[in-house]
Image (tube, rainbow, N blue to C red; front, side, top):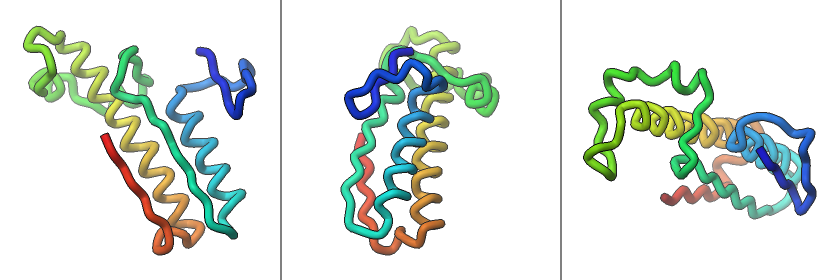
Length: 116
């Protein structure tokens, strides 16, 4: 994985990219909690490449995900399973950010916009 943060190449940072993005967003929110801030979080999950963590894959039932709709009729069941696990990771990371806003008492005074 190649990972850049604030224009700095950070090869020492390891992990799932979306988890790193979430970690840095939460750190930013904590550091700026006492003043107004704008935090843009550019998740790129559900786009190629199809890569999911083992625990997110395990959270998805392959029998259920095989029956999910897909953009292409011939999408393999394995790809649907991975895509579902990636959506699960997105949900998990958004939930972590919202939980942090709750913990810091910022949720009632924060506008969260989620678009897809």
